[in-house]
Length: 478
Picture 1 (tube, rainbow, N blue to C red):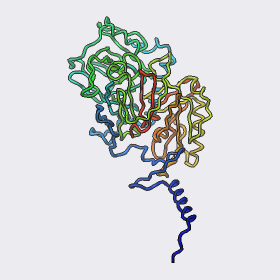
Picture 2: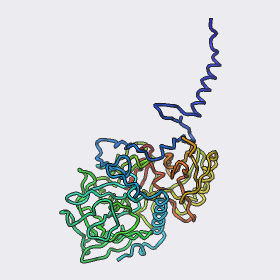
Picture 3: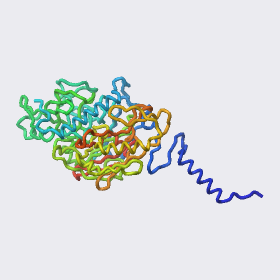
Picture 4: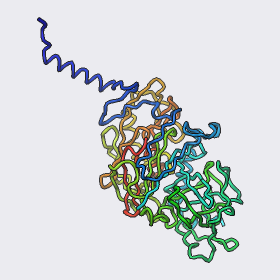
């Protein structure tokens, strides 16, 4: 007769097996799936890099109108694969530094000195704009009658929507330049119109006049600019979400770091932003999700109930007297690997923090970044270091690894809002041999902190402008 296995031996065996699974993960359907850890992400490195296979995110509720936007050089594109025209990662981060300098100049300088150049909902899937010359995100909207599709950078740090218009001195864009003379619904705004002075809220300086037409001028801190006629035309977000008499800039003299996009979609808080102009329909609510890689897609949704997740945690917007259009929020703490840093909350409040869809890498006050970097380096000590890359100074060589254990990083805001960053928001990969902590430190404690778009990846970011709050929910897209 066989001797029964002692119960204690069986329990020890099961415990040993569980420990092995925790250390090594589970093999399931050909993929390695790491068991959940409260402090670490076990990440397959290839998952943080663009795939050669198109994997668009779900569009969500079928009742929401949506347009599909495809990365020009990504695997979902039906266009020619012109990778040679794409900027390098270093070039993109150099452009990002120019962006940050531009934003800081708008907050630091006298606004009068800026730019002196003489209910329902609609969803627009968004994608990385890296391969069309800008490191921001783009959506496609329709303008004019008949409708012309235009790919625009969407920007929470800007108010006036503008596009390049014929005739003009223009930078090179991918799509044909909008010709207002071919649109039956186009009209320019006259200097004597009561609408012309509204440019003050978007430009921070009075409008000009040319041949009785109201003229806008936007000068960015990096010396990019757009100058042209203030006008109105029909804007189509989708086939059913159409807005007559939408006010925008018809740019006739444009230059700068706009890539080959057709212009910019302003999502700020002034009266001329698309958020304010569509308030009657959408109640000043919009949300977006930025995909983890350029081989996937995200969305930009206007109206309440947007996004794919309901677990939204909100924090109030703060007002900034120097630029009330920016979306300031109260960042109070950061944790690395489950441990909150000792950084005092006053470090974040000295200059303040705002969220920006156009800035790539988050910028932190010097003390906060130093604390974050030290904690991250301590928990990543088993991996070989790599050379710094552009503005990123904490880099590792993962060429000998298929998976890496990355400490979780959480951002904490007032009123209990929290972001448990996706791995794509923690590491920025130049290559498998150079993956870097995706944060940068400011040079001065009085420089504004910025929550950039890398850290926002995969979150449903909900802007309830009317309610004075912003919310975050994980798993908005992939």
